[in-house]
Length: 169
Length: 328
Length: 114
Image (cartoon, rainbow over all chains, first blue to last red; front, top):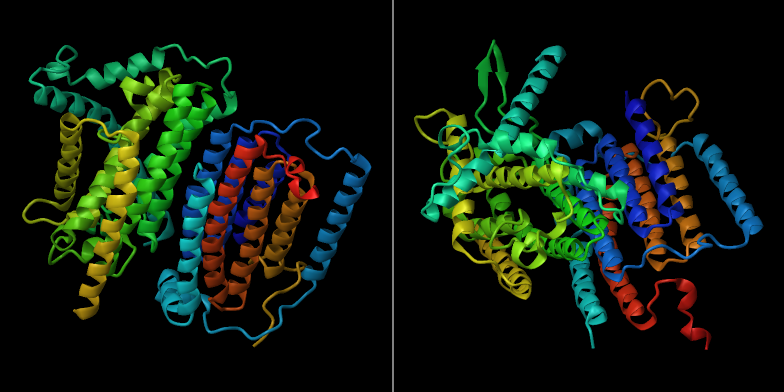
C-alpha cells in the first residue's frame, strides 16, 4: 500500500526535477519545480509529517515559486540562447556518467545500511495521539525557542535587504 | 464504520457538495446581477424564465457553443492549462469546511464535513495560495500586454493580502486552540468569534475581497484600464472556467468567514445546514453590496493599504489577543 | 532499541524503508547539482539550489519518522524559513543585476575578472 503511493510520487519528483534543469523556457522550469514540490509534499504526508507537508505547499508552491514566476515575467528573460547546455559535450557526458555512478554507489551503500542511533520518544502512535502540529508547536516554543527567534531576525533582515536591493535609485 | 460504507458516504458527500457548489456558482451570477440591478434601480435579467431565473443556464449554453480562440502568439500548453489551474483550487478548498453538525443516518453517525483534517486551516491557505497560478500564468501565456499587467498585478496583490489574511485568523486560532475547522466551530458554542475578534473579522473580510479579486480590489481585471485584465484573450469554456473559479472562490471565502467568525453552522431553532447557508449568503450579499458601492482602488493605494494599514493592524490584533489569552 | 533502516531486499512487501527515501533524496540532490553546473541562467541555477534544499529536507523528514524524533521536522521548518529569506534576497540581487547588465546569464556577470 505504501509502495503504491511512494513509487508514483518518487517518479513524479524525479521526472519534474529533471525537467527543471532540462527545459529551456524558465517559466516551464518553474512550473516543473512546483510539480516537484507537490510530489515532495505527498511524500511528507506518507511520512506522517502533515504540518511540514502543508507548509511545503504554502511556502514553496504558494509563495516562493510565485515570486520566481513574478520575476521571470517582470524581467522577460525568455529562453536561454543556444547552446543552452554547455558546449563541451564529451565532458558533460563524462560528468553525468560520474554522477550516475555516485548515485548508484550511494544507493548500494544506503540499501545495505542499518541506521544507527537510538530511537527517540516520538513514535507514530504517540505523534498521532498528540497531533503532529501540536508537537511541532510545543517544541518550537520550548526547546527551539532561540533558533525560532533568530529566524524572525533573519526574515526581518531579508525583508530590509530585498527592499534596499530592488529599489530604484 | 465499516470501510465500504465509509467510502460510499464519502463519495456521496463529495458528489453532493460538488453539485451544490456548481449550482451555487451558476446562480450566484444571477444573484449578483439581480442585486446590483436593485442597487441601481433597474430590473436586471428578466427575459429568460420568470425573473430571469433561467439566465445562468442560457449563459452556460451560450459559452459552451462560442468559438474557442487561442491567440497565435500564445504559449499554447500553458494557455490551455491556466484556467484549470484556477478552477481546481477553488473547488477542492471546500473539502475541509464543516457545513453541519454530526447527524445520524441509517444507523451511522455522519460528520457534515468531507474531511476533518488536523491542519484544516493551513490546508485552506495552501490551496488558496495556489489560485494565483491560474491568473498569473493565464496572463503571461496570452502574450498580451494588458493580460500580462493584470497577471502581474494580481500576483503582487494576492501575495500581499494573503499575508494579512493569514495573520488576521491567528487570533481565532489562539482562542480555539486548534487548526481543525470542526473544532473551531466547536469552540464557538458560547460566543461567535466575531464578538471576540471584531478587528480580525474586518481584516479577514477586506483581505477576502482582495483575494477573490472583487471590487474595490478588482485591479487584475479592471475593465476600464486593462480591458479585462488577465483573461482578455480567453473565450468560450476557458473564459467560463475563470468565471466559475471566481465565484467558487467567493463561496469558499464566505464559507470560511462563516466558519471562523460567525459560528459556522451554529444557531437556534433551524437545522444547522440552513443556518450555515443563511450566514454564507449573508456574507456573499455583503460582497455584492460592497461591489455596488465602492469605486476601485488605485494600484499604489492598494499596496499601501495592504502593507501599511492592514498588516500592522493584524499584528496589533495578535498582540492584544495574545495578552488577553495569557492573562485569562 | 536500534535499527531503523533495513535493506531494500525483502522490503518490497510492506512499508517503504528509510533507504528508499534516502536514495530518492540523493538522486534529487544530484539533479540539483547538475542543474547548477550545466545551466547559465541565474534564475534556473537558483531553482536548482532550491531543489537541493528540498532533497535535504526529505532526508530530514524521513529520518525524523524512522528514528522517532521530531527534530528533523523542526529543522525542515527552519530550512523553509531561511529558504524564503534567501529567495527574497536572491531574486532582489538578480533584479538589480538585470538593471545593470540587461542579462541574467551568469557568464555575463564577470566584473570581478577585471
